[in-house]
Image 1 (cartoon, rainbow, N blue to C red):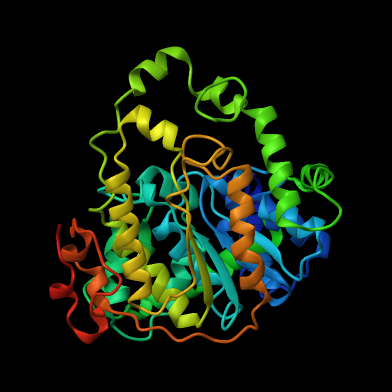
Image 2: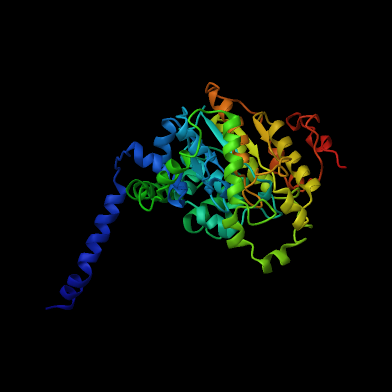
Amino acid sequence: MSNKRRLWQIFGPVLCAAILLLVIFLLPWERTFSPGAIYQAANSQTTTIFKGSLMKQDAFKDDYVPFYGSSELSRLDPLHPSVIAQKYHRNYRPFLLGGPGSQSLAHFLEMQGTSKQLKGKKAVVIVSPQWFTKKGQNPDAFALYYSPLQACNFLLGIKKDTPTNRYAAKRFLQMPEVKGVIKLGMKRVARGEKLTGFQRFYLENQRRILNNEDKFFSTFQLRDRIKRINKQAKLLPATYSVKALDQVASEQAELNTNSNSFGINNRFFKRRLNKRLLVKLKGSQRHFNYTKSVEYSDFELMLHQFAKQHTNVLFIIPPINEKWSNYTGLSQTMYQKAVSKIKYQLASQGFANVTDLSKRGGEQYFMEDTIHLGWRGWVAVDRAVKPFMAQANVPHNYNIHNYFYSKKWQKKPYQISLTDENPVNGTAKESLKGK
């Protein structure tokens, strides 16, 4: 037997299998998902769903509404939006997007795959001022949510050079997870240049492969939380009322926060805040500052995407557990300045649906732990979500301004007055007055 024949017998089947697999992933495939699978995906909060497109597209064509946020969405107590929507048969279902470490940059990238499906629709964003640290999105956390599929969608969807595209590309290039031809494409976009013919050809084929992978594997490793949602729903009153929900919230919170003086969930306190760590954390946040951050410009990317989609958005700004902030020394004055800056950025561009809960961190049972909404906090959220969802779906127009991508805006340390002049009139630099 010749050496060539031996080599073929060894490597031939592998080569044929690789070619067959490549052909399979390059061919267009159709797949539909059952209502049960989509409902499971909407509550799973897995990175596979976050980074994919198909299941979200199918969901948003129906009655699902994206709830963008971070780790607060993971806490499925009886008053969680998914539980309330299921219990009272709301005309919408939350599709939970985000988890620990997901911030504006990761959300903007994720949104590239559902732009058409959310045109003229609604969305809810829980925007945490804690995102607004000096450097913004943590690269390691971004790596968990980075989607090459959505990066391809971003690059291939660019029609012209804009400040938004240049800023987004520059930020993506600061994330080590962005590699290969995608990275080369980002470099060109960051310079205001078009993709090369080869880059476009390569990315189109890569997107085709990644879309097929999404179709085949999106239902794998889904976290099944439906039983938990149903179990929690049984704790709610049969008839909806804010008073009844608040009573359930207080009862549940009392049962689950009796091990500490901070009003923190017993399980969280036991796992995350042992005595040694508590001693170290006392006064540890007295120098924190959320008023100067690149995150303000990353947040503007999300706002640009919503404006592009004409999406009607409800923004919810949560508080910090006041007992905890007093212990760690986190300045509530600083926190309120950051909240004012966020609200100014929203209001000055036409985002009028803002529920500011930031001053309610001292209310009993409002928070579940140190920084996350809990029992009575979710009741307050539902009081905003319920009437918002009752509104008709009307496409919204916004006044997006590129000033918010500037380093000057990122570093503005000021208390902002919402009565100041609108930056879209070109007076933003003068209208933001320091204290």
